[in-house]
Length: 187
Image (cartoon, rainbow, N blue to C red; front, top):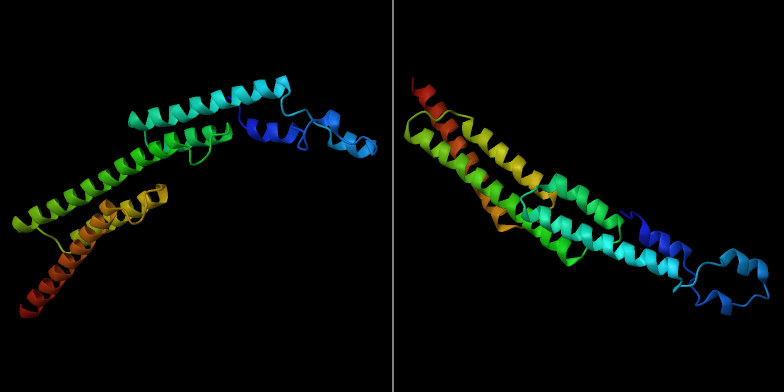
């Protein structure tokens, strides 16, 4: 594990070419800015190790995403991978993110559809209570915003469909409240 290796390399690599070719007439300035040459064997070794570690952690992120691990595990792996020098837009990290986001959005949609089916079944059986649909809608909405917080794009079609289900459940509950109020006024 080489957290911060890229920053370390940048900090200790001489920027303006080879230090031996630098102007030494202002020796104090030269001594303050002197660092190892870009092609120094120790820096090359560290650069190779950092690249190897970065590839390992990028592979680990993708592998864990494919194996079904969630956002919490992947977030920790991403932090380690980024610390070893993997770019945020590395193809393997982007694929891992897409896999996990797709899985999360699918789960949110399935749970939304299941809540809607349960509400419809309760209504067909004549056991639908006022407020039950709003509670289900609140749970759906919480799941959607939790998924957005975890990184699923807000415009994802599955999340939009879940929000539509949420709105339908709220409308159904409004209708039940209205009918319940009418029934009480008639009695």
